[in-house]
Length: 348
Ligand code: NAD
Picture 1 (tube, protein in one colour):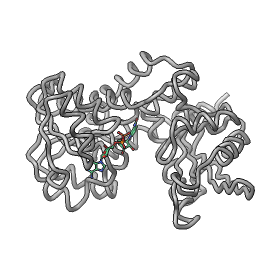
Picture 2 (cartoon, protein in one colour; picture 1 turned 90 degrees about the vertical axis):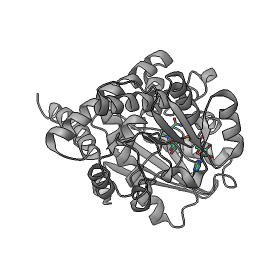
Picture 3 (spheres, rainbow, N blue to C red; picture 1 turned 180 degrees about the vertical axis):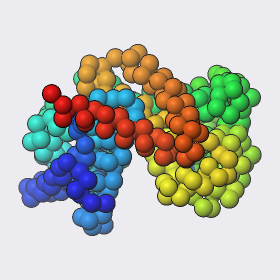
């Protein structure tokens, strides 16, 4: 991906702490760029650059489609989050974020925790994803799960005319932070819930609280189900799994579910599966961050996550009218919002 698609890409290398980080601001038409920081042991700096360019662009689309007044950005820290992370490095990273004067606001991503955000906060106020006691939003997972649940109801309504999930066979792949809250909504509504996870303790915990059926991780794609809810990994919708999946809806929290967006977005459509775009239905996490920026209110964050229902419906409508896959309808909707606000700025 060309960096010229982005507004600003900044590198930071600090010998004293060993910090090596890249921060990418993709688009600030709608507001300051917001997106998490990923700490990962990238094999090369090129790989880290490619990732931060891709992820920051993704945030522009996600934030725009969720109706938030923020742009897209992301940061990566090159290193092993288990062995290379320490207070000095995180605080140096905080100063790096601060040097942009609020044009970029950071949060957690893979390899970063709420505790890390607390340390970054010592050096910059441009950080969210803080714990409740610091005025933050705490764990965003319940908000994310609620948004996915809303997207799922809109999807069922599209196919059946009713938004009820009662009696629908839903397979939740991954019952971690988000998956467990999703299971709770589904069980409450009377869905038949199947769960898969690679960790037995996760399954045991969920099975002790809810009436669910366990599916082995390897059997997920061959299991009969109405709705497949990927809540673990990305790229699970690919050539191999599509030849096995028998669901009529895909709607889950995992990022980048389509292994190759254009190809698999079209393949899903041809197979007659309704795909609820992942970056829309899992926007609850960033919605939670957004409310932290403007003054945290969990009730307001939940109610904004509820809007995912209407946006999902609008995407299905656009997809049908223009005869395009749902991922493309979502992308075009996000681009249209950004373009319409951008042209405001050029007028007096
Ligand atoms: P998590 O790590 O808490 O949970 C993921 C669960 O998936 C774990 O229990 C893990 O054991 C399980 N898992 C991993 N590989 C699996 C496999 N092959 N088969 C079955 N289970 C498997 O993560 P989370 O915070 O619940 O997030 C889930 C997904 O949603 C991730 O892709 C994440 O990027 C995305 N997401 C999360 C949020 C949020 O608010 N937490 C927001 C947006 C997107």
